[in-house]
Length: 246
Ligand code: ZN
Image (tube, rainbow, N blue to C red; front, side, top):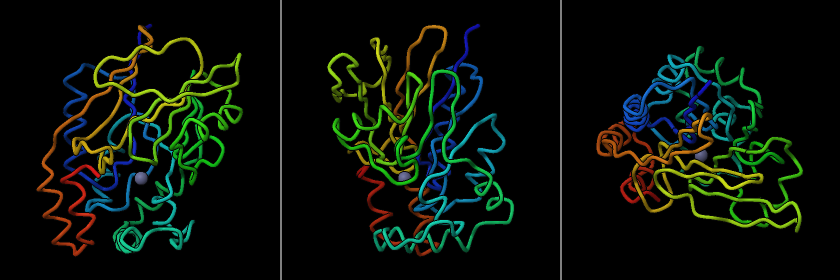
C-alpha cells in the first residue's frame, strides 16, 4: 500500500510558516502522518499555538535543543545571546500542556526505513551535521536506510559508499528527488527559520510507493511573524533574519 509522510523540522514557534506548510501539504494530497524533527519552539512568537496545531495532526515528533532548553532539561550557556533571550521568553510562555507534550518526547525514533534525530544519530540533541566528514562518522550510529535530521536549518543530502567507507554531500533539489541505492542522511531544511538564503519555509514529503521525496519551498506571511515578534519584544536580529532566510 502506498503511504506518504511529511517531514518537517525546526518550526521554531513560527505559526504563519507552519500554517502555510500544512495548507500546502493538504494541496499535495492526503498523507499518513507528519514526522517532526524537533525544535518546535524557540526563536519565534507562537510556541503554544505551534504545539497545539501540531497536536491536531497525526504526527510523531522528537525534541530539539531549543525544546529541551525551554523545559529546563538543557541550560542555555551554549546558546548565542539572542537565542538564549528568546528561549527564556519561550520558557515563560509555555502552558502546562505544552510543557508536558515536550517532556514526553523521546530523543530518537525509528519508523520503517527511517531513523529520526534532531541533530545527528550520534548526539541527537546537539551535533550539527554540516559536512560530509561529520555525516560519514554518523552512519555507524543508525541501522536504517535513511536518517532524517534537522538542526542546521539548511536542506542537505549525504550518501554513504559502503564499499569505500566514504561519504559525500549532494544538493537537495527543489521538487522531485529519487535517492540512488545506499544509505542517506537527509535534512529537510527548516519550516520556521530557514538559513540557506531562501526565506521560504522548507519541508519534504516522502512517497513510500514510489520511493521518492519531494522537496517543497513554501512562501508564507513573514511580516505577520515579524510583527508579532516585535510586539513580544524578541531580539531584533531574530526578527530580521527571517527576511533573508539566514
Ligand atoms: Zn533549530
